[in-house]
Length: 144
Image 1 (cartoon, helix red, strand yellow):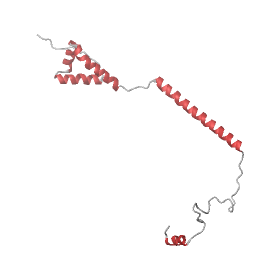
Image 2 (cartoon, one colour; image 1 turned 180 degrees about the horizontal axis):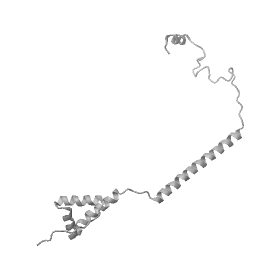
Image 3 (cartoon, one colour; image 1 turned 135 degrees about the vertical axis):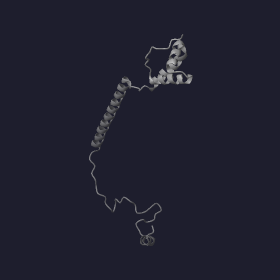
Image 4 (cartoon, one colour; image 1 turned 45 degrees about the horizontal axis):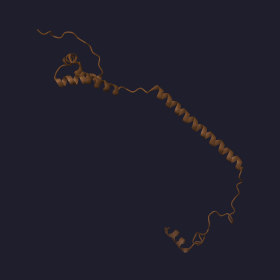
């Protein structure tokens, strides 16, 4: 006479382990309870699946930031900001010293007769200031 199972054992598993167990039971065509009974009798047969499920759980677990890495990153960011601030201050002081050493420059107005900025002739020697008839015709006709 066989004794019908009557005792209950509650086993806590991760979602990935439950999925592995139920899929194995489905593949074998047995209930989860029957699979668990067989696993106890031949523990080595399911240990690899349990190990694989454990690895999956670890990979799916949310990664918490390492406190040491967070602290080191903050120190590096502060040091970079301090260096940038110091470099800007040094550049500002150097700029002021350069301006002070050069002294004030006086601005003199340009004399249109002698200090004309644009030359009136080009490299070919043509007079750029003189207009010719083709310029006047182009302006009246809308051509350029």
